[in-house]
Amino acid sequence: MPAQESYPDDLRYHPEHDWARIDGDEATMGVTWFAQDSLGELVHYEAPEVGLTVSKDSSYGEVESVKAVSDIIAPLSGEVLEVNAKVVDAPETVNDDPYGEGWLIRIRMSDPSELDTLMDAGAYRAHVADQ
Amino acid sequence: MEATLSRTPLYERHVALGARMVPFAGYEMPVQYEGVIEEHKAVRTDAGAFDVSHMGDLHVDGPTAQSFLQSVLSNDIDRLADGEAQYTLLTNEAGGILDDLIVYRLGVGQFYLVVNASNRAPVYDWLKEREPRGCEVRDASDEYGLVAVQGPQALRRLGLPDAPVFTHAMRELDGIEVMVARTGYTGESGVELCCAEDDTRALWDAILARGVVPCGLGARDTLRLEVCYPLHGSDITPETDAISAGLGWACALDTGFTGAEALRRIKAEGPAEKLVPFVMEERAVPRQGMSIDGGGRVTSGTHSPMLDVGIGLGYVPAAAATPDTELVIDVRGKSRRARVVRKPIYRKET
Image 1: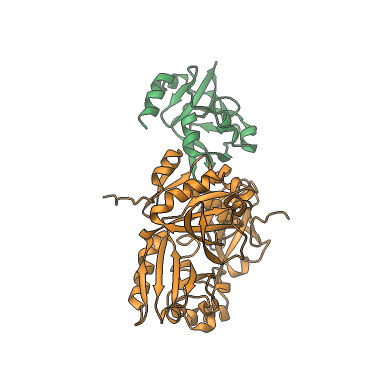
Image 2: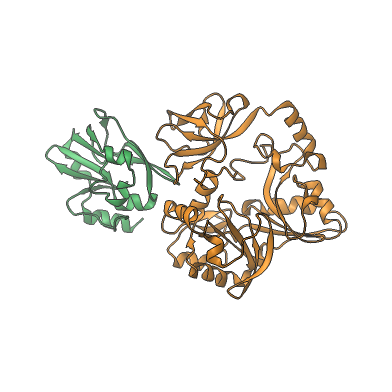
C-alpha cells in the first residue's frame, strides 16, 4: 500500500526532496513522500558503498521507477556507515514507508553545522506547495 | 514557444480519474492512473483499457486503392479479405521504416489505416504525394475515438464473442456502434474499438462500468516491451531498415513495394546489426540511448513488472545477436551485464 502524504516534524529537509533524521553525530537519510510520489513505484536503488563519503548537495545514488531515474541528493556530508539492504532488494519499500523502513543510508556527519541550512517540516511543506 | 497540445475526447475523463497527464506526440495523454505496475498486471491477469484516440486514422479508397497500397506498404495486401487486418510497414527507398501500422480491409477498394500519432502528418503527406488517379487518401483522425481493451478477460468483460486475431467486425456495445478489431499492442488477447468521436466518452464509460481497469501510456510501453513489439521512433525509425529490425516477416519482398529492392539486398548480404531483446543479468534498468559494448545501443529499456528485472531492445552487431550472447551495457558510467534472449521476453505460463 502506498503511503499517505506526510512530512514528519522530527525530520530535517533538503529542497531536492530528501530528509535526514539526526541521532547524535549520525544521520539517517532518505527521500520524501513528494519525491517517491513524483517518481512512482520504485524498481531500483543504486546505493553507495559503505565507507564512501557523501557530500551535501551532491548525488550519492539513484532511485528508478519504471519510467524515470533520479539522483538522490545528500542533505548532509559524512561517511556512509550503512546502506538499507531491504530497499536494495525491494525498492518499493520506499513507496510504502518513505520515512521508516524505506530509509536509504546512515552516515556519520562530518560537519553538523550543515544542519542549520536544512528546512524544518513547516518550511518544507511550503516548498512542496510551490512545486 | 511551446506548441499547444491537443486533447482526445477522453481528456476530462482521465483528469477526473486522477491520471498523471504528460505530453505525447502532440497530445496530453495519461501516463498512469494508479500506477504503472498495477495497470500492467491488470492487463496480464484481467483486462485494461487504453485511450488510443491520439493515433492517426486514414482512409484510402477507390478502385486503385489496393494496388496503390500494395506498392507502398511492405506486407502483401492482396492476401487480405474483407473483415481482415494486417500489420505492415511504410518504407522509404532505402527500406527505412517511416511507420508501422495496421491496415484494415473494410470492403473492395476500401482500406482503413491506423498509424502512430507522431507519424500522422508525414504518413498522410507521403501517401497523398503518391496517390494515383482512382484513389483518395483522407485523414479521418478527428472523426474517431479509439479505445484498446486488452487482457485475458477483455472479451468476456465486454460481452463480445471471440474471433480470430487480425479480424474486425461492426458490433454494438452497450448501445454504441463500434468497429471491433482483434488487434492490440500488449501480447494479450483483446480488442481495439473504434467509434464515432462523439461516442468515445460513452464507450469509455461503458467499458469501465464493465470492470475494466484504465491504463496509461506507461503500462502500454512496459507491456509491449515484454513481448518485444517495436516502438516507432525508438526501435524502428526511417534510419533503421525492416530486415535489421527483425520485421522481415512483415515484408512481402516479391511485391515490389518502395524499398523492397534495398531490403532484398540487405537480406541477401545479411544485416550488419540486428535488433535483439535482452534481459539484465545484474540489477539495473536499461534506458534508451545507453551504449552496448562492442558497438551497440539500447533503443528501449524498462523494468519488467512480470519478471522483476531490467529488459530492453537494442541494436547489436550481427555476430552478437545470437540468443544467450552476453552484452555489457553502459548504465550511466557503470558496466552492467545483460543477455540476449529469444522473443518474446515474457511468455505466459500455460
